Image (cartoon, rainbow, N blue to C red; front, top):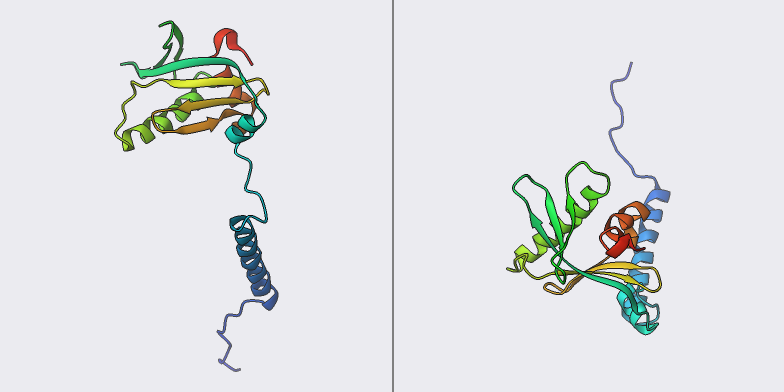
Length: 160
């Protein structure tokens, strides 16, 4: 009986070759985009501008925390309370999560919650939330129809 055995660990050559090809492909595509051979991914705001897509519905909103943990959404123009977002109600969690992210970005830049946000339904059907205080814009359709609908419900008449 022999007690000698091999402890050498080897990586299969085809796995190393595949990984190398993946890295080379990623670097080549990045280089082609950087030098202008390939176009960058479309930026929705630029696409809308180039296509002259106008807003269909615009609402300027403020979001404020209530002592019980709810978030009050107000139309800045009219002063109307649009909705009170209570945790546990379908759709409210997504809106609250997005707004927490926006508030975190404002806080990191030293901006408070006073400047309003702009919710826009565009004539091409896209829906965006813009924060002019930070320059951040979120395309809400990219989160799926249910999450998009949670924000669309904040438009006059729940448009969209």
